[in-house]
Length: 337
Image (cartoon, rainbow, N blue to C red; front, side, top):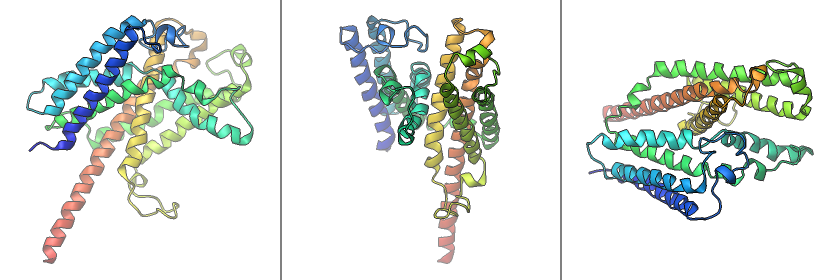
């Protein structure tokens, strides 16, 4: 008998896709709030892949989400056909990696800073959370959610675990080291700017902007570097058992989701941001004179992909260890009898 939980992943993904498809059709019919084109404050910079569209493009968006809903329903119904998977994975990839843009990462990165600075009497030039999360950015969370639900339904449908079999411990370990090294390229440039060193830019570029801007850049760089250190936990002992210096937790097993959820989220937003910079670089809006202002970000998809591989490998390894521990416990209990 087919499990209800995997089926409901597909039904939930279908409901999400249908809801967004209806919203897109409403935009095409004249409902205000179309988040791209003239409805996007950053329309002059090609951050989004949909930046050049108009509300009438909502009909195409609605059709795409209808296809996503039909695919999700096919996954929920189950079966042995591989056809739904061939549709599900490309659709999920588009919803998760192509529709969002780099402002999603900026919102996530700046939110802690915006919440903390007022406690110390500072601000970001009057910028607030509303500026970090306008509708054009909040909207990106909805297709992203649909894509993640569709991917979850596809994983539940794929009983052969064809995709997951690729994520071996060896590949996971290699991915961890890539995910640690790649962001250091970006970090080095932002730390240099905070120290008034024009690494990869001109002195005029630094002097034309307030010092606070470069300090914020250094904050983001430090955030990325610390993330790299935490990534090592995916292949280190302290990523499975809390270390001794954590007084109230030491010796306890680290809940896998404590690492998997944030690492998965970061891998997605970093990849999305990197793809947005690559799109902008392809339009010629950047110059080689200021290469450090954009080139390091173009390597972020490598960082995000590596972190994603490392995270999935960690998750599968922890599940395997849990099964082995449970099996050993059953054998011990049988032996005691």
